[in-house]
Structure formats: C-alpha cells, structure tokens
Amino acid sequence: MKLFVNCWKNTQLNESQKNVKKEYTNVDITVVWQSALCIHSAVFVKKLPQIFQPKTSPWVKMDGVPSDGVIDAVKKCPSGDFSLKTK
Image 1 (tube, rainbow, N blue to C red):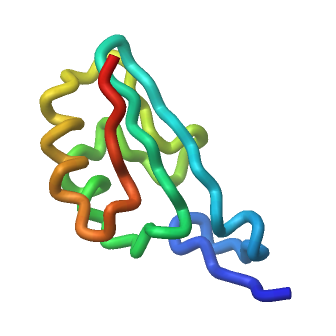
Image 2: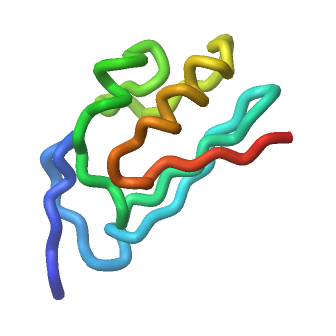
C-alpha cells in the first residue's frame, strides 16, 4: 500500500484517501477540490486566508465571503485541483 503525506496536517494518507473530491458551497458558487491534483502551492492560503484554513475542518470556509474573491483565486490555481460550479 502506498502512503502519501498530507502537507497541511502532517499525516500519512493511503491511496484511496489521496484521491478525494470535496465540494464547498455558498449562496452563489460551489468550489470543488480534488486532492489527487493538488500540489500544495499554498496560493489559496496566502491569497484568502479567511476562506482557506488548512488547519481546520472543513478547511474551506465559504460562509459570508464574497464570491468574486473566491472565483479570482480559483482561476489562479496552478494545478487545477480547484474548480467552480455556479448555481
């Protein structure tokens, strides 16, 4: 069994945990995160720390945040691990 290290929480993940897909929603948009594509560049944590909080669970906080900032950040994702769904 292959193990991977989760850079944010410093824990080991097995193969099935590495390929996780999660969705985070506010009133306007849904952010989709795919762990298998993530390169942990920290672009989101640096740009929007009030939304992206890797040491908490859930680590994406969409409530009360303007969607424009989230959309802008997701468009700049270097690995494509984040994508958007609009309502």
